[in-house]
Image (cartoon, rainbow, N blue to C red):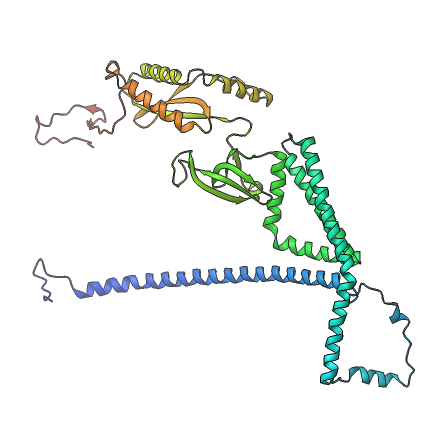
Length: 441
């Protein structure tokens, strides 16, 4: 390593400078490491809280299910069965109380033969209980089979009566669910034999489910609202949250769509055309988000195409050329949808003066002028019409008769000289070698 010499211009720097830099940045590293530790500790605490919450919900659900089976198969153990023999049991005399208490609390040791006999007796009781409850089980299965037949008949009948109504599917589904719930309640009542045990167990399970299944309950509520309010149907093109696509299937808890690309979201296709992917989202997005339907009651949307020209262009001529090309392309395409749109606006009490031809509006930008073409097209045909309109405009504006009249936008720089009074001036640098422009780009 060469020696340090302060008289030499190209002498290497002192090592102490590098040591000073290390000392300077060392506290920043410590601060960053402390911050990382705090973030890590915070994430660990958050994860522990989530696990504790899940464990609490699972514990509540487990207790409810345990109570359900206890009340279903042994209501006497749960205190719901009245035992008259307890009230009529003989009271021992005063001399035998101590002996009976001692006999109760004294441990009983069974021999191997007695334990085997007790196990066989318990197995025989279970087998006898199965044969005793077999008729109840058969009746319960018969109730479920009858519910399936009744539900199928009601479904066919409702399809004939209200099949054309938009909310018929939701009503049929709700009726089917009600029939099955009634049948399951009757079957459990037949098997359990004590309706109080059934009501108590269902209450416990409902309490547990309300805590642990909040998202499915909200999704089912969203399905009900969508079924009766008609936010979207199968075949509509919708935007819900970050999901944009055509509705393929609507279930009780979820909705499945064929994904559509968009220019404002990253994806495989940067336009409103199918990507080939299927996306499923929960129905609770209807309650918590915004639903945009592009093809609900009116399958057309307004679209705009900006055409940029230089400020030096003949704006009147440019406006006439752009409007002529747009009207030649669209022709009478906008007349029918404009009439439908006007009727919808009139029913809503809004402005019903809808243009049935493309319109062009001017807007100024930093260094150019935009000619915005506004037209009405189908929601699934936006890219096709915009591509065709762009091509025809390019061909028309490239004709020789519009040369130096319709000037396209191009990047450019401008140099301007300012005199001491602040006014623009024409400077001649050759006249005075010492003269310099006041401002230049």
